[in-house]
Amino acid sequence: MIEILKVLACMPFLLYACYADIKTRRVANEVWVVMFGVGFIFIMYDLMAYGLPYLIRNVLSFLFIFAFVYVLFQLGAFGGADAKVLMTISLIIPTFPRIMLGSTSLPLNGVPFIDLFAFSVFGNSVILTVIVPAGLFLYNLLKNPSESLKRPLYMFIGYITPISKLEKGHFRMIDSYEDTGEDVKFSFSRSGTELTSGVISELKGFQNEGKVKDGVWITPGLPFMIPITAVFLTAVIFGDLIFYITLQFMMM
Image (cartoon, rainbow, N blue to C red):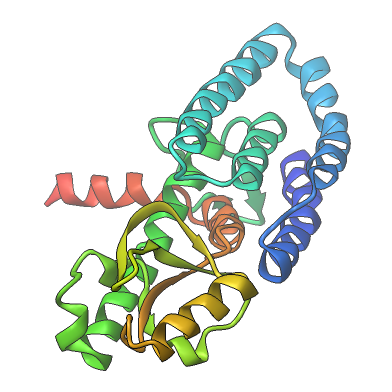
């Protein structure tokens, strides 16, 4: 029963985080503070029920997740809110919740060899987000193959948009640019270029001057909180997808 309550307690915060991520691509730190405050009740319950072994397991789970997501955050491959939600989950639900619903035992696929729930949530969410680059690649291949194939790696992370249709939003231009006087040079930028009203106006000016073609590569700001939430439920019900796929491959 306590494991079901843990999952139910986390869900409102995850759903709100999805909403905030879609609307603003930001989730306030207060969300995770309150989520931890609610989860602290379960942490104390488990500590009293299981004692020192639970405390050691909880601390090790948190430290492992913290080190893992911190490295990814520093490399720019992970957002701050994404890292914080996984660290909070690792404290509230350090290992896979074992839930009995009548005669059905969850997760359906059993507990993986590495029994770190938050780590499985992250790994499974990465599998889910692979669908997006594949979709972008197919879109570019069908929509504008001649231009897209000139930048094959860009096909997985963005798409070409006419300068006349650029607008402010959750998008970034993949390249940075420099006006040399005679033309405009574009080059890949790790952080991209934010499409502010000033940048859009400047690009339109370059186009009117004939310095650039009517099309630049942009990348959407994908809300990673959605796959994290979806996979949170998947991990609770089904289990670790990576573990399951690996096990099936080994059996073959």
